[in-house]
Length: 192
Image (tube, rainbow, N blue to C red; front, side, top):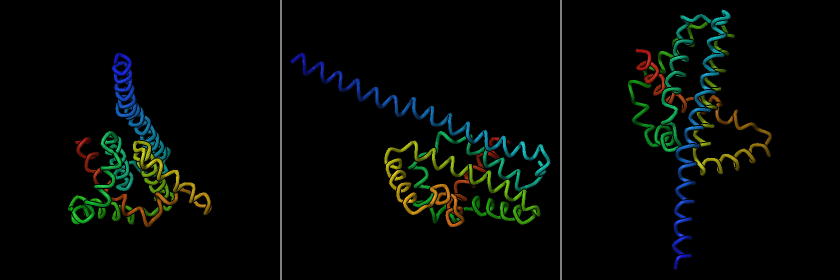
């Protein structure tokens, strides 16, 4: 009887330890490492502006920097469930959202007003890196998505394609816009 009780206590302690390691320590590490990568992307964009490659007052630069600030701010809320709800279940509600429409109009207008192709490439590169960072954050936080990603990566490798291109292609970019608009709103609120 004592042996069963000891085994039960040990098993419960093991489950609590695994839960604590995954949901507390690993999540904290994951949030910190993702934020650090986002800070690096923002710093690269800032350094490009400081070097004169793009103006600090350029609207496209400001929108992208504000969006990065918003993603940094709410990294801890990014999860597979949040991603799925935002991109798939709430698609109709979000597409009709005035917040999303305002963001899309501002971004597209600023993109068209930016005449330099080099400046556009800087912004698109920062945006692509931000999206990849968020994607990998979401995948690393979900055991199920990790398994799916590894299988998908294997298939893409067999077809000589990169997973980064599949995540950031033009056809997928519109889906990221919903999360970008949400992050931009948070970034604006933080700046106020």
